[in-house]
Length: 361
Image 1 (cartoon, rainbow, N blue to C red):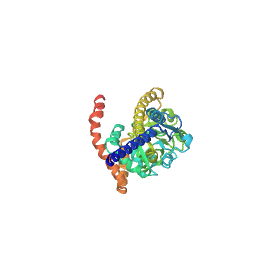
Image 2: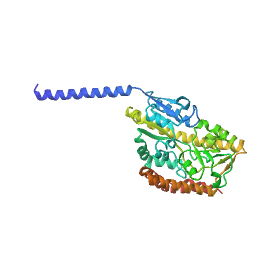
Image 3: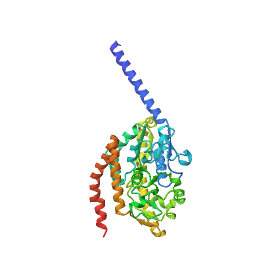
């Protein structure tokens, strides 16, 4: 056998060995199991929000055939309902479930990705996230923290809150102590209110003890079971969260350690769980609104007076202009949302809105 043939055989043999090693590594990766811990802001067995994380766990473990498992720790376990950002960033937890606007103290640009006053509805916002550049902008905010952020379930249009006294004018907002997070809290502060953020498990007690005068939570889907109607008879329609999107946070390094197929399974399961939460929230709001009308006739459902809404919109616009002028990334996000809202709302107006208007005689 000549030297050329020997060389060819050696190359072929090395290639075969290399393929076998690659297949061996791939096989080992396919057999290796991974475990993530997820910290959620919510109490144990919290309806709808907590069911989103349970659905995620179920979908991931089923689709991965048990190669990726998830343990969920509720706030009673980790004791830090508003500490999810730091716990996932540090790697203490691989994942978290919360809301992006809770982190405005960590990064002020995080608050734009939950919802914005007078902004997009849930379908409009999902379109912006996945097809209008929203995911890329969210990555710009979270990349520097070593985090990945994904939509985590939408509540739909939220109610404006429970009030112990009627709001008849802008003057009634002066000194009003209200639990309301995110940009909406800043809007009310500009109009003289005193917004605060309180974890879900403490809301009823704060309202009952008059630590706060009013609060917003979600809507009929969750509010009725919280008992707010027992101590605050005025229930106002929304303006501040037309499509409140929760959030799955993932530690980037931990995510990168997963094989590609498990990464895809996790991302797909998050998207499926988020959609299911939106559908469930919409259903529960319809069911519980019917209960309110039938069982609690003393609850007065009201809409804020036009001058109050006008003042809120003006304050919101002024704050957005201030943010955009002070921070280039904030301007990029604000401009993107405004441009997309103008485009998508035109379709909403001649589709859903026109249809509903045609039926209201």
